[in-house]
Image (cartoon, rainbow over all chains, first blue to last red; front, side, top):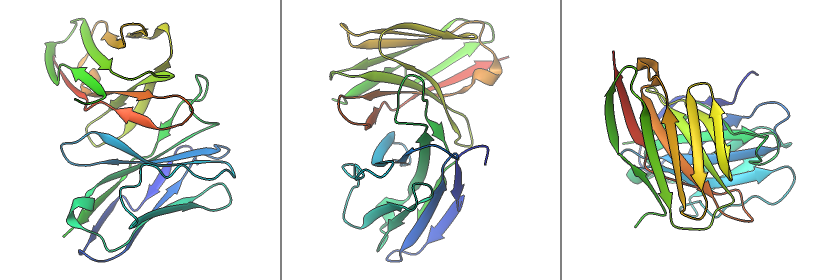
Length: 116
Length: 109
C-alpha cells in the first residue's frame, strides 16, 4: 500500500480481555516500530523489529504486552488481560532500514484503544 | 526532569509570523527528530538531523550538539501549520526514540 496501515482504527474492550492490533508497514521497509501515546502524555517507544534480527523489546511496559512480525512484514501487537491504563493510541511506524538520515519514519494513523 | 524538554508547550500566533519551537535534551544523542502531529492524530516526520541545519520549504531545523539544543523555525506561518510539533532524540546503538511532550501551535488567520 501507499502508507503504513493500522487496524482497527478504534477498539473498545472490556477490562481483562485480550486485544490484537495490526500493522502493515510500507512494502520493502525492513524496520518496524510500535509506539504508544497515552492521553495527556507524550509518545513512548514499545518495540522495534529490524529484518530477521531479534526485536528490541525494551519499551514494553509489562509481560502482558507482546508483539510479533511474521515474514518480515505484518506485525501484531497483543495486549493480554487489558487494564484501564492500557487505554491509549498505539502507533506503528516503518522505515526502509532503521532511522538513517536517508530513511525517515513513516507513521500509521494509529489504533485508539479504550479499555472500559 | 524529562530527558527531552520542549518549549513553549502552547503557542498561538498570527498568520505570517515567524515561529520558533525549542527542544533541549540531557543525554548524548546520535540524531534528533522533529515530528508534526495534526488534529486527528496523523504523524509526519519533518526532519532528522545530527548536526547543523536543514531546510524544507518554510521549515528550518537547527541543532547544537554541544549545547544539547535544537530549534524548529517556521517562516511565514499559515493556519495549516497548526499542529503539535514533537521533538524526539535517539541515543547510540539502538533505535529507541525518547520523545518530548510536544508544542501545540495554533496559527490564527
